[in-house]
Length: 298
Figure 1 (cartoon, rainbow, N blue to C red):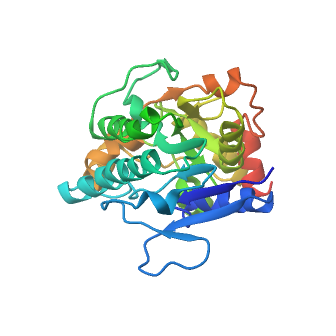
Figure 2: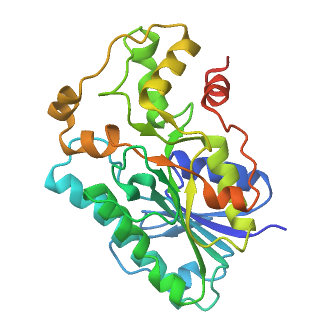
């Protein structure tokens, strides 16, 4: 059965993939856009301004992916943009959905495994406590910003996404050139856990969340077999038939990226997809070698 689905961040990596998949299945896609005069199938919105509830009335589902890219040196201004684009934008949308006359059945809001902070070898599930630091605190506030929608009786799901692997953007895209040149290597000690997920499983898992009414609250979107950064590095090098003998020292990352290095690249998050597994989601790419083989056309 077709439905009307609003997507914020529809031009980004995740939003565009979801729009393509849902649209090809016959669903009507409505895009939230920053335009004074939106076109057909578009809704105008500004993440820091109140949204007219009438504009989001009559939707079946809302997928909220909009947010400032975290990549770059985290100056105070950058951190404000990262936090506000997520927290204020989510609050504005949740408030409008709560007040609309015809509410959606489900509100799926992006979050990230940064919620857990740097946790070493600890196995993390949706029940694990939040971590500390800017990224963890931002994720905690980001998820809390959905509260108005939850109070109004809308099923709210916060999808805590791991490192998304895709041919067209994200971490893998940035790593390919140095690795193809034989300049790849582990990041820092390489012992930190990277919980990853193939873009096809992001799409599949979100569609699973939309269908499965028992899912609400946080849901980890990560493959069931996380790897250390050293394992990720060696697997990628093997797939590309290139050596991986040029490690990136932690001090060099800190010099280049400051706080972001410690909280995003050097942090260890060993996360499991507990709630997806419990509700029967079958991963297309549960292991890293298969995911990379698909993405690299090997």
